[in-house]
Length: 172
Image 1 (cartoon, rainbow, N blue to C red):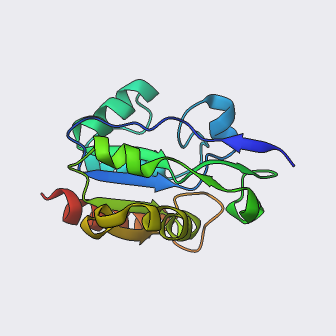
Image 2: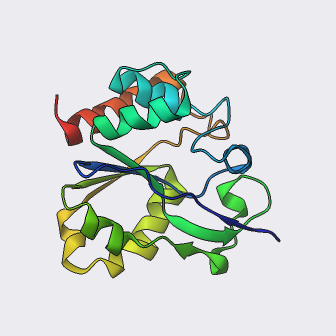
């Protein structure tokens, strides 16, 4: 089974919210950028909140995230997985990213928005216990996955939930 690795975080010193996925899918890994699958709702949903079109060049989208106070990363630094589905991740192979170091460098982050159930469960299991007192400063929210594999909610429903969480965590 192949081992896959995540990307470096996208963040600016004034980040107040961290959005985490579990591990980039195959399309993202091939493209070398977050949420590259054309049917993933992440960029349309977050872009609508931040006021940018999802078809902006990638560098412009990530710059707009940073300007909005949003950081982006994945819970896992590496894992074994066939394909793109979270359900295919071999649990024993999961290696989390260094969130203690990241959050020490990002002291303004007070909320972690988890993009789907796997990211939420992995963050709570593999990251929170290692954060010590910093864990009590964080609000960790599970949001519906923006992945096209999770079609139980419409894009509009996902957008409402994501926008409500972002508004609550970033303010109006």
